[in-house]
Image 1 (tube, rainbow, N blue to C red):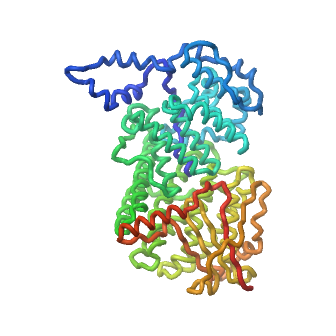
Image 2 (cartoon, one colour):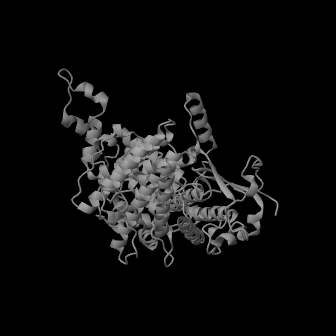
Image 3 (tube, rainbow, N blue to C red):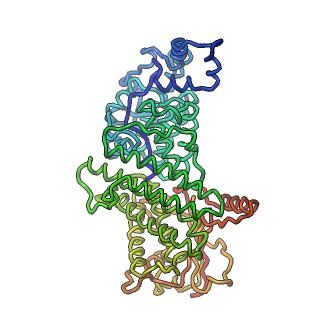
Length: 617
């Protein structure tokens, strides 16, 4: 889902041969320059434009054009990336730098024909990257056209995008090499990184990290891009061009969603931004754009509420809940329905994918809005409504997750591995309701428990299927962790379920989950000690589980006539979302600091730590 907030359709970017509207607006709005706009000191617009036109990227056609055939003759598929820049022709220093960067990036690629075959062989990754962005509904340039243009005469940052796109077709070890060369020649260079093309390159870099299940690195790439965008004034002048508008809104919305997922503040406040959206003549798609923007703005207010550490979080949550319902009304009620079947055509599939991704994002926001109230005030009757909405939204998240990530004929609708982690957190929240924070609620009923248990079964199977593929590291971790938790609360016929047991799981960016069995849920509870560290298999294709198959059998077996397999298990949460802030400011600061420092911050594709203590039989 997080990948739904990526790049725009490929538009012709600015080159060094002239100023774009955004270039002029950005430079004209620099506060220092306004000192020269008065009766005594003034500056000529034409002189200013002429001065800035002589930038470092103003190159002759001979200096910037590199023959694709010449490059292909020097490239070999699978060759080592250049450690030193190719020799550039003697000339202007800026020309040499531009030429060296282009040459080094192009030498990282195989011949153009091989690059095109690899991208097309990956499926529709590039098209999805364009279609899911905030921008026009249809692409204006095919990948083949883009690649050919960039090979022959593209800005180094555009070549960097091509290198990242090709790297996505390789395995994880090779991908890091391609990302490294782009980091060195484009992103680490302030001149290139601060250009619109460079900001767009960081946008694609973040999308790449999201797809391989590294939301923290994705967030970092997009946050860096936002900083450069602010330096250009893009947060205020983005609406002057389609190109700038697509880049800014993709960054703005991507930063908001990843900040919510990671549990950190967002990058820029609404009050500093131009919140206008360029009009789109395609009515239905324009409405979805407005929905994206409104969800992004709501995410900011939800994050504020989570991190405010004030006693009025509950009333604010009710206000935000009303706002979210108003946002949902932007689309007809039928738009929110789950499709009974998936379409067969690519164009129709694109529409379904975008719709499900937006729905997943919306319900994710609702879940996280009410999650702190469910965890902080489990026995407070006024907060029972928040518990109900939180669990209902988590169910809706899982329904969308299953459609996006369930394998059909070996393929999935959404290639983003971070979506696996989003689905996993929804499953954990549902488990917290089943075996912890909703077990005594009068809203609870056996029919709903059985339905929740069934959707957890289906989610576990999806994680297992996705863990078997080469790119399934995140799914493998989700499967092993969920399997162990559900095995611990499994049927009493399971031998491991009949033991006195404490299981503790540290979930990245979420918190710590403790599962307690039998009489351990009392004042006699023993301290949780790290009895077993369970690393996940580094080879998902050969993944066989975490060694807890016996525990898993009790969950996977049918349990007719029983809403839940076991009622003597209790699951507790500790972390940022469960911190119960008091009225004392010093205590609030201390609790907030403890919540942050105790949060597991490793990325989702790394090993998660499990502590397992079992006594008795």
